[in-house]
Length: 370
Image 1 (cartoon, rainbow, N blue to C red):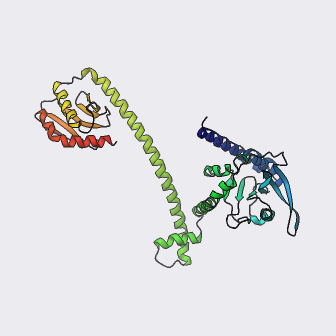
Image 2: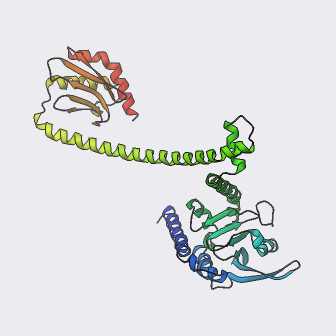
Image 3: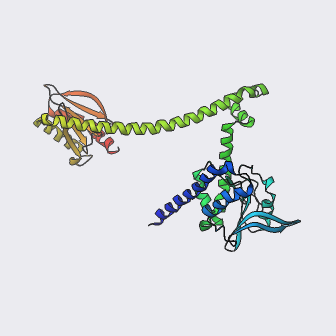
């Protein structure tokens, strides 16, 4: 197994491990009533199965981690995760469903400054907020660089989450992407919030692009529902455009397959009635000679039908060069422009085909680019 395949396998296994813990949260969250039950049901499995630490090894996972911080004595943070004999991650826990804010996790904030840990985690089992010291060294940021909601997993975040696991832990790699991830994720959440319920500032910003008057209180009241409606329509349009594109591709494929099937059936039905005349073969040789300045002659192919004789590039019915209509007293040729048929042109003698040599070569050149 190559490195690429092995990496893909590890990623798929990791996604499955995250999903399994997420399924537990989805199934059991309503029955959990305490912080301790949250730890046992969701947080310990996440530490063990997702982050990859042995929850039963106190050298790797230290519960109720205690240290003296300034005037604060014997304060505890719920878990400290140890790697290479050094505390790497501190985790503060809340009951599932409880709001997460640093005001409710002062121990985590203080411990971050007095240990060598670079990662702080605040979680209620469902939502996992990961913090670093991006803004100021040895001081935990007030905003997380990664937010994982197990009931609404953003798969784009899973590669970043995997960097935090014990087998992949590399603080330099984490730090190199944490700042961009922090702000991109925060902006994405802010945009999502604005789309759900536009703030006055956002309404004012958008209204100022279309309204020349003063944005008074009454004007804001008028624009609030208009902005909300416009945002919803924008999202719907984006979704519909993608669906139309996808359905269009599927429809084109179905049409192509149906056309190919029709062509095959027509060929089978007509083959017994088809006679390729000497004139058609001569005209075909002329077109081959004209086209040989662009392609080798064998790529210019003939396919006879009951009512006409078609000349293709590479025997591909979607790459027509010329169509010969010689089955009546008056002979015609039909030229093509960008694979679209032009009006049929009457000819009296086969050498008149040379008059259209320039158009034939141009069409071959176009077909070569398809």
